[in-house]
Amino acid sequence: MIRRIRTLATLTIGLAILSGCAVGPDYHRPSAPVPARYEILKGWAPARPAAHAPKGAWWRGFQDPLLDRLEPQVAVSNQTVRAAYYHWRQSRAFVREAEGQLFPSAGLTGSAGHSHASFTGVSTASLEGSASWVLDLWGQIRRSVEESRAAAEESQATLANATLSEQAALATALIDLRIADADTALLRKTVTAYQASLRIVENQVAAGTAPPSDVLTARTALEGAKAQLLNAGVARAEYAHAVAVLAGRLPEDLRIRRSRTLPVLPAIPVGVPSTLLERRPDIAADERAMAAANAAIGVQIAAFYPTITLSAAGGLSGNPLGALFSAASEVWSFGANAALGLFEGGARRAAVGAAWDAYRAAVATYRGDVLAAFQQVEDNLSTLHILAREARVQNAAVRDAAHAVRIALNEYQSGTVAYTAVATAQVTLLGDQQTALSIYQQRLLAAVDLIQALGGGWSAVDLQTGASQERKPVVR
Image 1 (cartoon, rainbow, N blue to C red):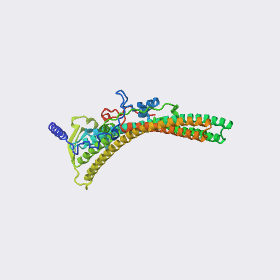
Image 2 (cartoon, rainbow, N blue to C red):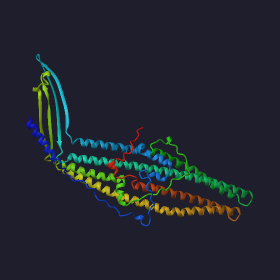
Image 3 (tube, one colour):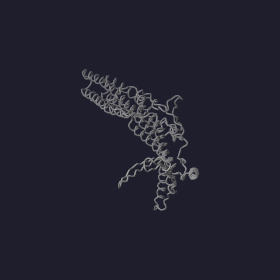
Image 4 (tube, rainbow, N blue to C red):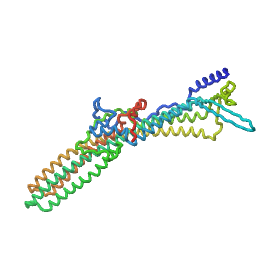
């Protein structure tokens, strides 16, 4: 018996040494088109923040206290992020499940019984332990583990991308809300100016120096401004509700006070294009999906080779029950089993071909998303560049329009122009002011989009450090 056990142990060790190989292709990240530089940066470079400027907490660059307070809550309370978090947890469990197949499995069974016939009773009892081990000679299990690990890292990157997307959505909603507050303040100022103009017109009509129709013109402009002011409240309420939901709260649980202070347009550092592949969590997720698809090829190829299983069993069996633990009741066995499919009608080759096609599709998705990522960066860099120039021109238009209103009012009071000149100048001023506000809104939103396109403060190194799992979501 000892000789047999030694033989089995020697055979097991030898097979374990042979299991160092794994069939199927080893993974190497495919190349992707990467430009040497961003096109829009020719002749224009964005300001770079100081070394102490926030990186992971990118929203601090907007210098909005409410944004600073709500953004960290997205990672723990936002429902989309929470769903991604538990999907990541599930993928980690799948890794542990796959790793468990690398080790032997063991079990224990026991039974006891008594039968009686023709005045004769027979008692039986047994206690047996068994173990089996599927030798991973061809690397099928290790490729499966490799696939599961890559899938878990893909899920981790997806979690980071969901967090970044929801945080960008919160920043967008809050910027829209701040702009709505600024527009409301502008309309209130306009209503006050129109009321003052109406009083001037009424005085002119009372003095007999202006026709009564001027009162109707001034009153119509005032009522129109009041209507716009009331309508601005609708958009403001919707933005406030969106902010609350993105932060994981009910709209009624988050009351946002009106503010006259707009977020600051942040300085955004833009590195060389190649770093984009390491800074975008969605690109990292695509890369990990390729790795998982590559490992799946090895899993399918390994199925062509025989499956070898070692098994052993040992225990006690006795009759009657009192003899169960005697030396004569010992039973044991060990052996090896090999299984190999000989004919499957081409199903196995089809499975390998399907795995290769899935890998090629993952490569195409990766390269396509890389191209889209560079497009998004270029688009937002262009937007910021063009809007900065447009803002300078529009601000000059606002100053000129305000000056034109003052001149028109003075000329109207002196009787040299009709009130229609004043009304036209006032409408022009309000339109220019709202356009300037809209341009600043577009610049802020483009900054958010650019930060998101650059990957925020995330890095592919976080997949190894586990940094994307910053805080566990709060279950409410």
